[in-house]
Length: 220
Image 1 (cartoon, one colour):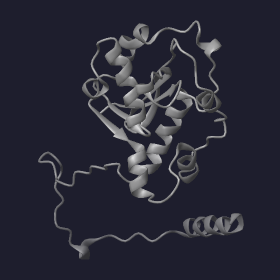
Image 2 (cartoon, one colour):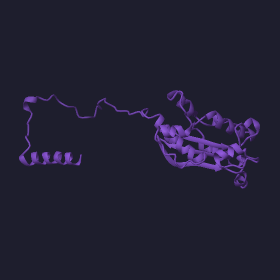
Image 3 (cartoon, helix red, strand yellow):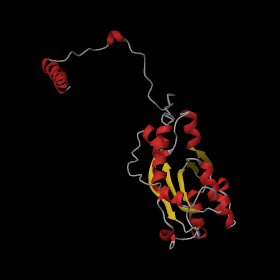
Image 4 (cartoon, helix red, strand yellow):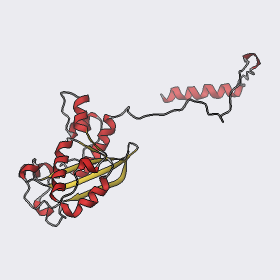
């Protein structure tokens, strides 16, 4: 299934208090590999940004003045995520904001647009109980380089989350090996070991063998 790592930045913490989305990023993964295919946009929220939120993401109201409204980008965003598994860190936060924006313009909610929603924060709490499980802490735990993350940014955070997800779910890759012999495959006959021919190495081959391992010891 196609997976989408999604993140948003907002004017504040609560959509029920009139806060709005100001940035959306969605990064595609296929077969546990991040692709170069992504969706990213800034959004004019038509309201001020709380200072506490601005301190986190560094996005200003002036910067957003000429950016599109959510209603102008909604259909393109829906087209990008439709039918995919959406993976979000602290999913209730982002989904709550997205659904608020979608309802404002009479569009369907994320749960009905996507195939499913997976919360990496919930997974992190299960496998790392009692530990800090924000994105920075998980980057450190799973050796993901986040040195370029001076501020929270939706696109960078979505990309980092993809790498963290791989680390968190490592070992879940399914290796399918079919050991059933195909009817067209050649069948092995019983081998009589008394008839086996043993070929001893000659002197040149023995010397080459000894030289090879001597060189390995020197390099070690």
